[in-house]
Image (cartoon, rainbow, N blue to C red):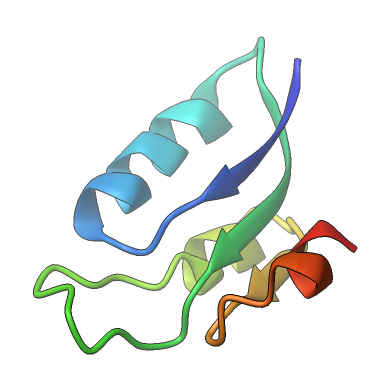
Length: 69
């Protein structure tokens, strides 16, 4: 199964690690943020995605069309 993962908190990082280790899931993209004013457990997934050579879309403005493209 191919999947795009969306997240920007510590639990998202941990779940993405599990998905990347799975043989049945192919994470083909990650959507995350570069910063958050309201998540105290904010964690950009960009470094983890980069380690796995997965394309990343940084969505700091909640632009739904840009995210879909």
